Image (cartoon, rainbow, N blue to C red; front, side, top):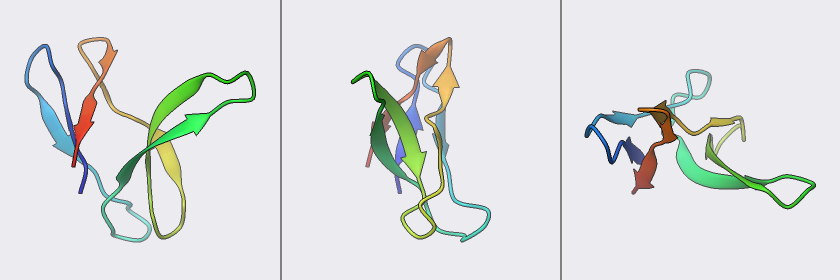
Length: 63
């Protein structure tokens, strides 16, 4: 399971899909303009959310 942590305050969070009950995995979404967005994705249903934020910044992921 991917663990997202804030470099500034140390807050950490694990996430799972409420629909499938499986851990989300870290991924990146590439937009049409080439910009990359950090996301957390369900490996089963492929649902995705924007990666968590803390202290105004994306939390970093470690697996």
